[in-house]
Length: 486
RNA sequence: GGUUCGUUGGCCGAGUGGCUAGGCACCGGUCUGCAAAACCGUAUACGGCGGUUCGAAUCCGCCACGAACCUCCA
Image (cartoon, rainbow, N blue to C red; front, side):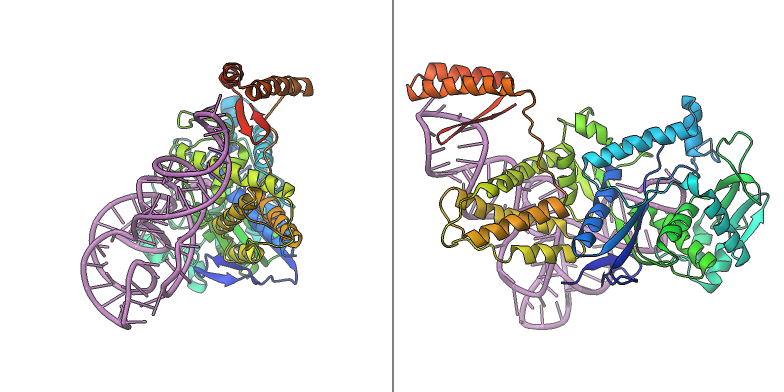
């Protein structure tokens, strides 16, 4: 089965053919570590985690590079020109690198709880200033940039005469020149569409490095060009990121690489869609975001309760990565219930007893799941197929259908591969916290209740159940016993 | 204004030129001392108007509405 992925460059699904045998280079734009990760950050992380997992699953050797942006992004407010990291640091009276480390650690922790595999390489922009300076020099040497008062700008118009600036986002430079507003007080840039490759640092700017043009810092888009090609080569397979990065970030990256290296570095561009809240993008600038930690603790006015990392992951995987997914507590709760049912079925599958023959049809499941993944990572279809199989599992469990040993083994294998290996869903850890003695005490109580039930002593039996329920326990009566959880 | 993309049943969310997506909720049923849980099952849909077609929710056109990007943003 051949993997097809949607390439933003062609706006079609294309068959994935690696540039170098069975080795795949994958670069994804990582977080800017000046704040806590929110649900929007989980989307690309999970999307490309799925891609990473699936490419690995089908046998590719993948080098996955996801950067940490810790320099060079400018804020567009009264402090324009001031580095985000530097600004936050000054407010908190912390060293910039202290802020970077703090939020990087928290990002890693959140990713781990979401069961997002760490990338092969996680380069920091601040550790690749030399490479970025070299890259600027290459673009200057090629004649596609100019120096102005210590800063270096990319000459978009000149580039566009030879190449096509705007081919990723479908933008037309002439229209942009007409429609972009005039630069206020900006005299360094020749044209509004030009973008910075190197910026001279103002005196109060903390993060700065020496370069041939000035003490300053690299432009916004340069780090990905420098680090992507450093670790994956001048031409590599896949570049991913959020749709909001398509323009200008990725467009500029394409131009930089073409100008500096003479090559179209990336074969497939992939973009995940946004998470919305009440139909609007969840984002920092709108102030409507919910951090991952808030999801995990339930500490946010819009959340009716806490949601586990696996629920968040499942919720995101229930939508296709190129669709927007609208957040709501109700939708999260629906996902939570659905996933719990699926995972219970998965556990149940391990204990199913085989029969001589199968009366359920499970043969095509693996192929259907593979087919869905090969169709541009259609995880919602994979999940729906698993739910279909879940029905068969439950029917066998109830004794209404039977399954042969071979079919059972196959089904167990498919579930293990798709649920754990590819979708990366972990069975939730046993919520029943506490030690063995505590568990036995509850068991003891419920055994007493069982005895009361056998004696038709409903008063005692209901009393035990009601009081445990009031304490927060969930009691389930089963055929010849009970189950409980807190 | 430009670019890109959406509009699916009560909610979330797939997909397809003719054949049940799936989940949650609802309703019906099984089970149960009762209940809960669990399990099984049924129903409801493709923004509007035209066109192409034997047939369109699926393709094309127009319109309406919405979103993202055009400024840091996953």
